[in-house]
Image (cartoon, rainbow, N blue to C red; front, side, top):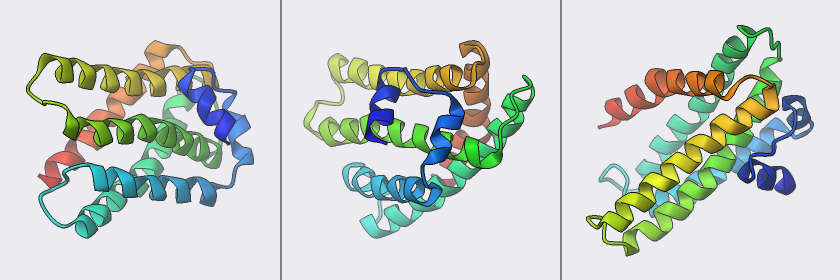
Length: 169
């Protein structure tokens, strides 16, 4: 699994069926465990760390499930027929690979002057890298174009990420 995550960072994912060999419960356990350092390092929703962790978990788990369900449909539009479990394992692995640089940024960002151009550019680079990591690996693993994968992630952001964050605020 570690080597597959490294491949994600290098935009060299394998075919989507490759990731079905991993236990879904193990992948979700890792997703849950990664929420702990993310919650600790992020400033959160101006409440206690415990409630922030609960909120993050209530967002993370359904988000991965919804993304997998959406991508079964989205990829099916291009005659890429995958089972829900196959797409679920892959999207959960994508979530893990995207979480690692995000946690790294959350860990170093308090030590950087947030109003400086350098920190703004660094934050933008992290966001672009994470987004490209997800799009490029989805494209490579499923054989769809990067443009089509990008469209899918933009729909996910519009349907899931933005409304969820607005509800929390």
